[in-house]
Length: 87
Image (tube, one colour):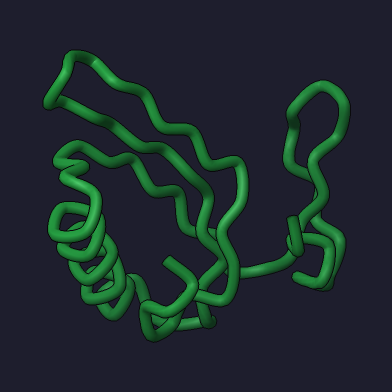
């Protein structure tokens, strides 16, 4: 996913199998600071790659434009640097 142009990092990635041939994915993706209209291209490329390579047809991708840290409660706290996302 990080190889898709515009994607800087991916975290909080979860994948579920809903059956032998049905998979779903949710994640947070740190992307370059682009207008919302330009982020649609990134989402389309992510969805195409996930479908083609992993047969994942249903995705929920939450875009983030600034670095964050995840607290113990799961809340997102701005930190000013995306270096913390290197999981």
